[in-house]
Length: 112
Length: 111
Image (cartoon, rainbow over all chains, first blue to last red; front, side, top):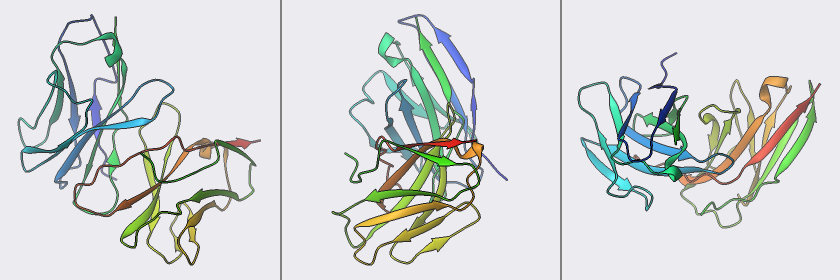
């Protein structure tokens, strides 16, 4: 069964450094998302992406965040200058355009 | 904000049916009821969804009341692997509609 994959599974970085989280959505999917989950808290929507542009973004998704689909398979989330409060699990999701979204296993980001 | 109300936690004995309730009294006519679950440290996993008819798949059954103001997710024979947080979500099945997660119900399957 096809699945969403994410790399790395765990990323440790120093405050102020740039990080890029990578996702490979399911191949025939058209809509892509990033969510995050701070430890012990709810899963929160960050951004949705369709047709090579952002469809919607949340208040969390400020100028420090960007997304890109650099080729036909990868979907990336970049945090330009990480803060301590960016420490969280980051989940990528994709879907074909209706019904359910499929989530990846997540990247645990730890900012020191 | 989430438009659903769920109990914070529930216990169920292994092998028994787990019945997880959800209230969604403000649901609109074009909104579906979706259920996802999140096993510890994993990504959310889709379980089932429905509009007004009861639905069943290989994972679970979804029972929606006639007035659509509440629903119940049924895991017919719960196993230890079903221990997870279960999210009841109300949303329109749009093309790019984000999912708004609440706190969900933490289901403990007891051996």
